[in-house]
Amino acid sequence: MTYTMPTQARCDRVPPADGGKWDALDLRVLQEDDLPLDPRSWGRAEVGRWVSRRGGLPERFPMNGKALCLMSKDMFASRVPGSGHLLHQDFRRRLAKALALQELFEKLTPK
Image 1 (cartoon, rainbow, N blue to C red):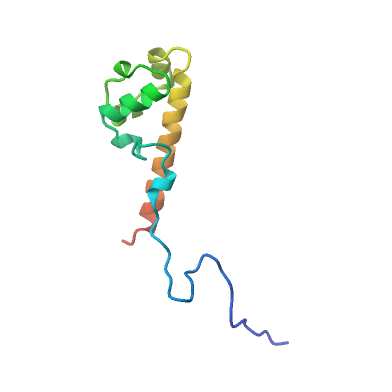
Image 2 (image 1 turned 180 degrees about the vertical axis):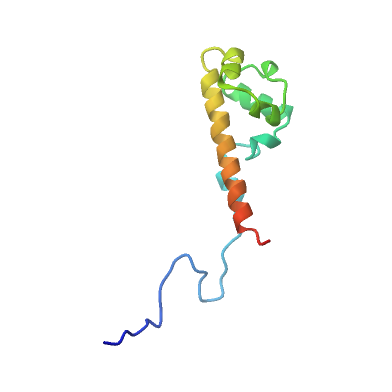
């Protein structure tokens, strides 16, 4: 029995045969709002906007995004009684997404 290799295959992930190319990845589609994707890069102004949009008082977070990384769930809760755990959860989710994207880019970048 002989096996004949197919001469043509269809795969939607391959650039079109007519010379078209994939478009560059636009990271804005991954953004949830006007804040930078990676919360570690947030300055005090971005932290303040993020906190106020989630019902907290920006003056209770006079820090940048790197400082937020050092805060525990209890530290968030003490600054925003009642919903600090939600603020912490949102921050950790954003941080996890940024770290996953960083890891992906590192894997895709030729060395």
